[in-house]
Length: 491
Image 1 (tube, one colour):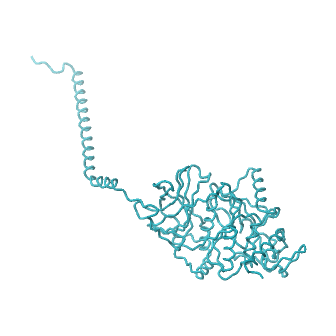
Image 2: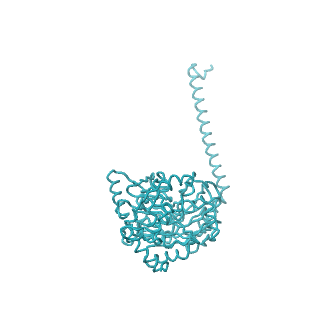
């Protein structure tokens, strides 16, 4: 008798189902084993093929590249006052470096380097910052502020562009930065090393005002007495220090500046040169700066900001002036009282500002034919005093914002321009002073080039008498005449 394996059809179906489950599980186990075997194979292969690289890396870690100490760096100087760094894409010229730990920096301190670079968009570079009281250094990634505007021209590669290079690092209470070097790749030879400027007042108190003057270029013009008159008037108005940048000037003007620098400490003189391949022989440079107006303006950005950053901890306000212009207060006898009232006013209306600007007005030559000697209140104004004898001005101010000069707040600005702030910690706010309070008196033979066509009608034919400067004439006559005789400019 033969017995069937499956007694019923249902048993047959269940058995087939179990068999399928068994084979499925078996295939899953085989796939799992094959997958991990393949993964292990790849790992072994990767290890084998990269064995040499791992060995090389180990050797590099055992023998790291030698870090150049500040004293061992061979600096590539350019035109005396600059340091050159040749990157893989562009040439850098560094002028000075500054320590910036102002409150608005926040948790970071920053080393700021003034530079000229022949690229619009410079490559990524790094900063190595050395500290004065430790042997180690730190490396941080640099970033850039372009301190020019595309709209002003020369916006192209191969023309030197002014930049502020920033090297941020965590704020350190007990460590002060001493040197900074910039480089593109680690373990390459460094060719620059800038001592970090960190000027601080001895008594921790700021003074009120300092004036900065861009590179003087008066090879043959002797403006020595006019320079004395200008310096003395600024001092009367409350300016504590004047910083002059100098290319080449007449010997008598140099004599004046050296006297003030050595005898009164009212003046500081800094020699200046142009970076790169720009000319620095006096006659060639003068011609170059006269013909290349935009190049000249771009180069001027450097001394403006150099002066600003050297004094951010020493003075409340920095003013950029030429020696033919002066901001005259019209309701006060000095800048300090005027600024105090303005600070109080803006505080009361809850408005902040980064700069206070003065409107521009022309005091042109020959606006009055009898302008040589003027008698007032029984006092004769000597003809050699240019500002005191030029008391006729245009009745029309140049338009708002044009040719102004400003009081720059040293706590709030990152980069300055001749007329107004360029970059601030937040959006720049410049408040214009009312013309009843103050204005910028500009003493020139004629209007600037851009206003030549309208100069006759707008500024020469429309003129008024303005003797506000005479409020200072007694002291100004005495001071200017005394020093002019002392330096043998007058008999």
